Image: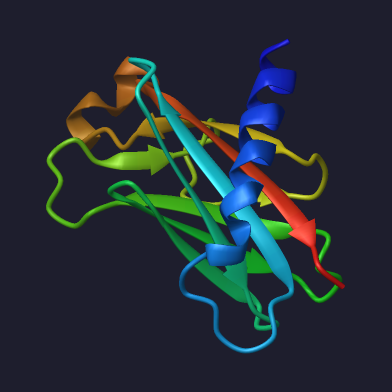
Length: 138
């Protein structure tokens, strides 16, 4: 149910897709990204991505990067907070700063805060969830 709701919300964002900012060159993907924090607040954006292998989006105060592989069907996803933010986000469930995405559209990943070394043994502290929807324009 939640997945269907998120998909509908991300799909609704496409109505503004013709006005997506940052388009350069020939667009290959329409990328819709939604970050829902643990407290249920959220930010979202829609952007065109060109034919190069790196796509960077600004979602609220977070920088989201998608590094596409040759096939274009899979990518590495990373999310980072603005520099100097005391509550540093984001790592994935495995503690890594990048996640490999090979299936699922829309795709979702749970994000966690980066804990300082002295608190690393306390486990994960959830930041929220990122949802990514890609539309291949080719």
